[in-house]
Image (cartoon, rainbow, N blue to C red; front, side):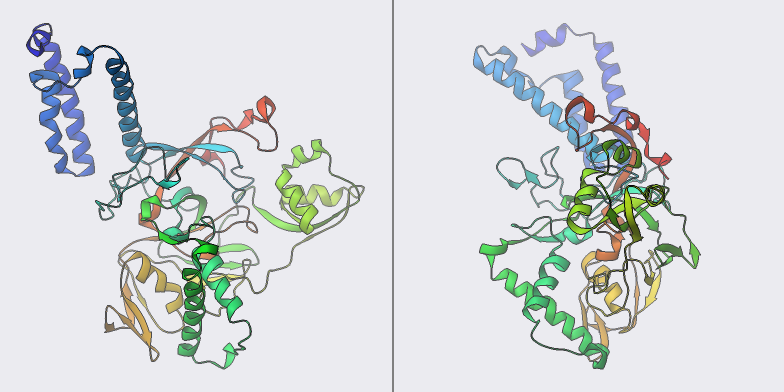
Length: 478
């Protein structure tokens, strides 16, 4: 049967198809530098030329077998194509929260380019397409952890630039608890729980030595961690995720490798010079109203129902400078409006140190750069401990005021990767690097190119479509 099928073919056309497909495939292998893929070439040759393998055997069947297998064949082809495209070229991403408003809005669907910064070779290649880490309905892992490949990035069109909006894997998402998968395991679960359990034990950190402070924060974390581990009924099991299976986040890159970043009175400074604020940067304002805000004014000033809900519940809401100025001028509507004061005692990065930093006055902090060496001491070990230990996989200990990396005492460390500092444009309503620290280069997913769809969660149906945002290029959102 195969010989008869082969006899009907125009072999010149078949050879042309084989050569074209093979050349494209070999160019792809050169790009990704993966010669293991050469094992596929004989199968491509068989598909177009020899036809020894009966790839579509089910076409000779009758009844339900042919019908079912035709759908299976189409589904498998679609899934493989989607996997390949999403892994190496582009994927869809939807803005789930308001951390980048009013630059990117909740409900914006982004076309995210993997080629812009270079796609990563997957660390967990065996995964179900169109899922990040969990299969819907049955709520189980959508990937298999073996084989696990080391981080490697294919050459792209460029590198992350200052003020780029970037999609990346959530760094603190390496560990989580099943019952609170959206909570920061370290900050919101372990440290918060540890502080609660140790609340009756008074400590005066100002009288402690650097080593005693370090040991105290280790105790806080361990107390919380041990309680969580012993309470699976309340928290669920503690689970971990590989880098490429962690949640996708999107923020603006406000600090590049090797830069020294500091936030002074809400303004980001890089190497001592102020960085340009995003056009639609937002801060939180305490607002008192004389009467409700009309729908027309909400639309004009970009005030969402989430913003209004915050005002009704807490007495404050995020506003752009334009919106704050317009409200302040409207004496009939607004009784008073004032920029919210700094939050004291907020748990910021590094979680295991006393810095006195706030979300509006933070740093200075040096952002690690690949190949650069930092001098370590008890004053900065808390800042660089997580990159050294968690992201670059070293054993780090602090004993007797001395630092040990992989069993050897040292006061220096040379970084193996570049790191970035990411922040949301909604500066007072954004869980970002101020709370969980640096973003390693192996967590970078891609660059949003344009908004291909946008729907307002405050309005349903046709009226909720934000027509003015469709196919808007993200690079134009400064």
